[in-house]
Image (cartoon, rainbow, N blue to C red; front, side, top):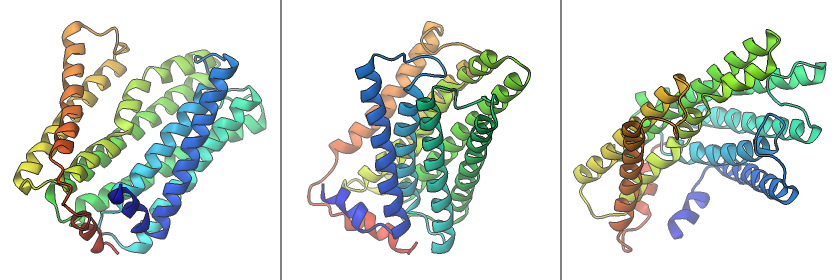
Length: 302
């Protein structure tokens, strides 16, 4: 618990703002989930309140994850604040506009029926572009700059950002396909073609939390760095396999639940290994190991 509170207290101003905003967005998704359950609304379709739920929860978690993971990068403070500030603002815009359209009872994406709806759809697309550019900036910094002192943590952050870019690129393809179909006069096809890529988008989105979290937990163990690196590499490979399998299924139009048995088995195995890596890291934590070991890795980026 002390380690978690230190993340807040040791965070820079831009990071603490991102954490607070992420918590608010996550709360928004939770509230919408309660309303959806209480009202017995549908979980399916472009008008479902599910969109406000998923956008709030996903953006809230992703924003906090990006703020935390990139806090270990050794990049200039002004550049870091600009990237994180843009990511935070775009996340708020995405969640607010989607939630607004849900309460208005109209689709949030691929909706060009009125000038306002068109403006919302275009703003959502532009917001997605801003998010992609900020993550590209963070990824470039992670690959070029020295990063955290611990090579295992550095690898986890780099891999998490790369997989996050895959998620964002998938989202861009979803938007592109949907806009083409909607502009062509078939909005239903827009939601169908875009929706087929949702599994890949969802799975890849949260590697930026899972992989750095495994590496971070390992910093509290007494295992040598070489051993921690092996654990992180195992987690990275298993996440890559899971992402690749889900990606092939998504782009070939196969539901993850309807895939051939060997493919499902591979997904389950990759998920189990990834989860096992996290549990293994937890099992090695020494209560006496202080948070200073991780905190020192941030000092160079201040």
